[in-house]
Amino acid sequence: MKDGVRFFFSFLGLLGALAVHAQVNELPRSTPEAEGVPSKAVTALFDSLMALPETDIHSVVVLRHGKVIGEIYPAPFAPEYRHTMYSCSKTFVGAAVGLAIADNRLRLTDRVGAFFPELLPDSVSANLADMTVRDLLTMTSGITPDWNMRNLTPDWIRAFLAKPVKTPGKKFEYDSICSYMLSAIVQKVTGMTLLDYLKQKLFTPMHITDVAWEISPEGVNTGGWGLHIQSESLAKFGLLLLNRGIWGGKQLLPASWVEQMMTRQIGDYGYQMWLCEYPGAVRADGALGQYILIVPDKDMVVVITECTLIDGRRQRRLVWNRLLPEAGEQALVPGKDYRRLQKKQSSCQLPLVQGKAASSLSQKYAGKRILLGENKYGWQSIELQFKQKEVVMTVVDKDGSTCSLPFGYKQWLKAASDGYPPYSVAAKGRFKGIEGPFQVAGSYAWTSSDALRLKVHYVNWISALGLTLRFEDNKVLLTVTENYSSGEGVTFEGTLAH
Image 1 (tube, rainbow, N blue to C red):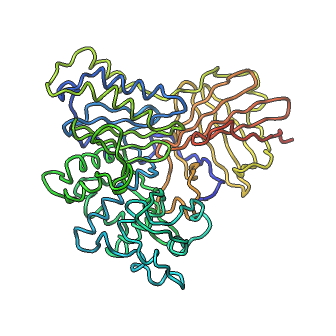
Image 2 (cartoon, rainbow, N blue to C red):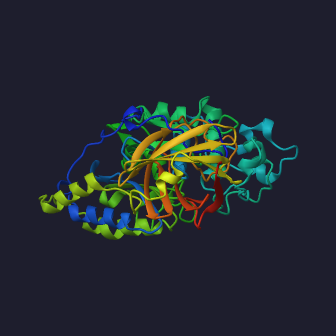
Image 3 (cartoon, rainbow, N blue to C red):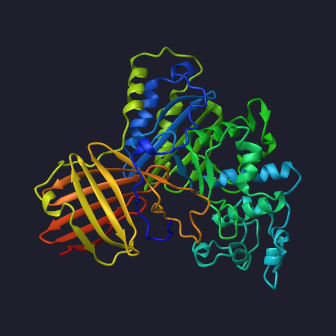
């Protein structure tokens, strides 16, 4: 498989031939009413989230009293698909640090430099010498974040330690490399990767089996991002924190450490997680929209995965205003509102491409090779095949590799890809540790007689692409948009091969 921008699709077969892990439906289910919540409040939350602009909801899971009372996976997404995490990953790092402290392998006051003497600069400043594990946990390392560093060198630890250091422990400066350093420290003191350590201490006892984590060029789990996990597993982790580290009657994570993680340490930040606007609520929070919302006074957990370009406070306000005020202590009787919720859960889907199934231009371009101009994706040519309510697009890379994907009309057609999905993280060695194939789903329609619109979601990732082809004589203009980027996308020209 190839890294960089030359990614795309490699058709391996339709969904029936796909091998996906199905570690789902393990948490107990209940009706909202049985747990004191009216179904209409859950439905209102789902409807409001689905209506947000510049947002594709991938999953929402609502729990009360340890039971799932509502969940949606808008098609083409599904419960069995893992989802990539951005900074939501950090809260798992915080848990691993607490476990290492409980195992007497680590202390909050340990100096960071002492773990990597071979990687320290020739001259160690007093501030670098004073930087502690706690400073990394609270994002107060004293190092100004350099978000491009991980893409410039494979030696992330050495590069981080070589940076100028202001007085640590004073100023909050959010930096994913702080979490990466914590991952490296856990690996150093336990002799196993962060992921393997979490598997041993938490994931295996909680039966979280379908999980992966990106690995840096140094062989360290990336920590601050890169966790690949199912939504129900996020819900399990949220319940673990809600219950102060207890799972199945056993204390897996020390209660005192959970309290510290969820307590204000600096600003609105605890240890690798955030305090919320709602009193007492805390959250794991990732870019583009992954949330584990933990609300102790309502005994609730809400998990959201999505790709959004809007401020996440809007999603949280919907939970605070639409759902939480309706959560009472008395059981209710389910009725027609519960049946409406059931229908919503079974029929929810992301918007399909709207337009017509066919165009008079289909035959002119069917099976013809369209040579593309220079483009950042490295695509050399495309070819379209038109079937009844289906379009198959084949892409040829500059190196000659060929890949195809089907798009359905008024339906999502699913397939698998051994090419990497679009990814906004710029880092050397990205995707290492994440095994393919990646699951994709496509929809198409002719939006006018000369314009074909294609949409593809990577349903076990986060990203999606929109492609618009405009046909004019022997030329084609191809515009590509990415759901994690604002703007009108990039446009390049193609010509019919003779």
